[in-house]
Amino acid sequence: MAAPERQTTKHRKIGAYRVLGELGRGGMAVVYRGLHEGLQREVAIKELLPEVLADREALSRFRREAFALAAFRHQNIVTLYDLVEKNDLPFMVMEYVDGPTLQGLIREGALSPEVAAVIGARIASALDHAHFRHIVHRDLKPGNVMLAKSGEVKLMDFGIAKDAGLEALTKQGFAVGTPSYMSPEQVTGGAIDGRTDIFSLGVLLYEALSGTRPFQGKSAGEVFARVRDGKHVPLHRIAPHVPRELCEIVRRALQTRPDHRYADAAAMRRALEAFLVRAVKVSHSALLVAFLRERGKLTETEALAHLTQAELKGLARRIRMGRSLRRGLKWLTALALLGGGGAGLYVTQAQWLPLVQSLLPR
Image 1 (cartoon, one colour):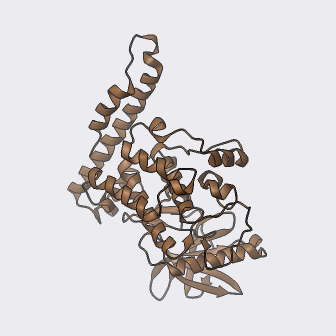
Image 2 (cartoon, one colour):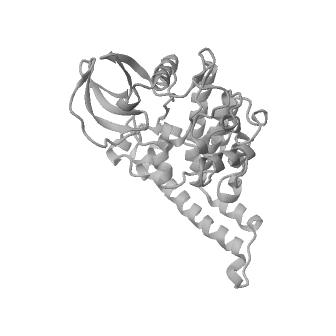
Image 3 (cartoon, helix red, strand yellow):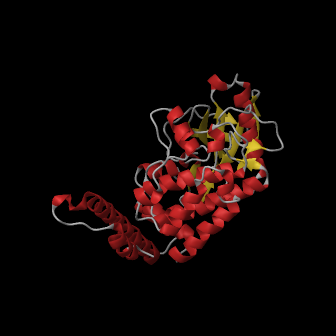
């Protein structure tokens, strides 16, 4: 389901679906682009890699992801169409998302506060839906979020999701997830609930807004220790252009103790939406389409399928202006920290930050 195809594969049939090519692969599975020949609908087909098929836990996780996806009916969670069995092997047939992963977008540069907040609010909405069904994602990270060319945000990969109604796949005391995005209770093997995903969403937003992860280290153990102790540079220091309100949302989500975070994903979604009401005066989907166009992820023709020419130009100008001002702010931050480099010039953050923030697009 990661957008561009890396290589083609021999055309083969899986049930009613014809495999068109490979989309991507990870440590446990490969995902193909496929076509339902009767409906002429493009799909994504997920298959376990041959080397992990003998692993009972991997197979259980694969089926668990299918069960989780089958329970969801939400516009921000990738849809499961079918679970096909062929030669005693399971294949998940899912919605094909034509667009990049959030991970790829962040690698190209930090996102604007408005774009990051829109994405965060939609992920929070998806998590609220999952948590209502007693399913905790447990592996929320930029690589598991996609942006469709239509401006939709899609959460995927529930492979290690925990369903309160099913037996846990992992024993108490074992950490499961991706180190930099795991919550303190995950790294210590403690009990988890929906607030674990809230912490991971805080990490994701921190990275989207700053371009760097809050918890880093030379080894997984070092990262675990930093997560456990909550040791990281506050967002407002590493990305001073981010509005204070948004920094506060991230700060609260990253609290070490679960009871100090948002009570649930719906509360975090409401906080993000309250920020967006004041900061974004256009359609959120339109903003994401213009952002993807500005990043070169869709053509002008594709963008104009959703926006008028005037809307696209106006949003593109706004996005470019915001990027230029954020670059200028980074320079001012360095200047302030250096105290003018001995040239007798010193500007405090209290003096220049409100002025520059007032110039950012609203």
